[in-house]
Length: 292
Image 1 (tube, one colour):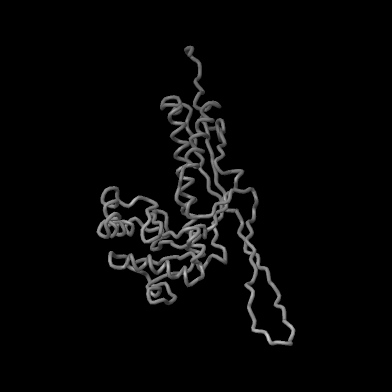
Image 2 (cartoon, rainbow, N blue to C red):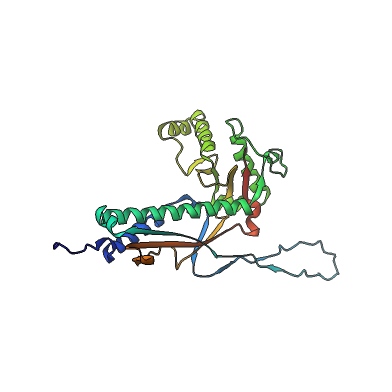
């Protein structure tokens, strides 16, 4: 480069593309909320999930007419209107002095990580707001939300209670088809790992060798740990019972701005528009597990 020339390469189209690629690669990477949720990428503003009233069966009398019952349609909907964004400005001199291409890739990856974490938190918040409360009363087959203190002596009971509640809600078939999950706090997941290492043969050998990894199956349930749960809560239930709508037009899109706000540098912005919803027909199959 000739003396006195300006190296604008960090803000050039080359690095814009590299940043976009790194962002997209991170967003496309496997994340367990994609396994747990039904995810819809759409440019529609409102998601609808209408449902019919269940029909009833009536005992008839011979020689008498049958009486029809009206079928009612209820529209359950949610609006994709919440959005979060990342907007970074990098001074032109800092960009020139600190790596260019490598930094562009790093920042793109970090933006992708933060976007995915935002969506994960939205998923658990949606389950917390829209799911069925589960507390100590559930062990006695009753409703309630008294906090459970998770321990090695009752974590199996919690898992069995989730499975029982699914059966009692008539969700066993969809649970068998989609799978059942529980997302624990890290400390609870540690207790689960200890139980797995102490019990069984092949299960204990595998747990002792590799530990309990994200997505481990135990007692017929897929288990995860998350730092983005609402405080004092875990989430469990039937997979695909939480619906996450993501606006396709903005997800993973990078906007670059030269000298934003008269600042000598480069601006990089991405956003995600989303809505997380437990549909009315799925409320009885998604559990907000209240923990001490």
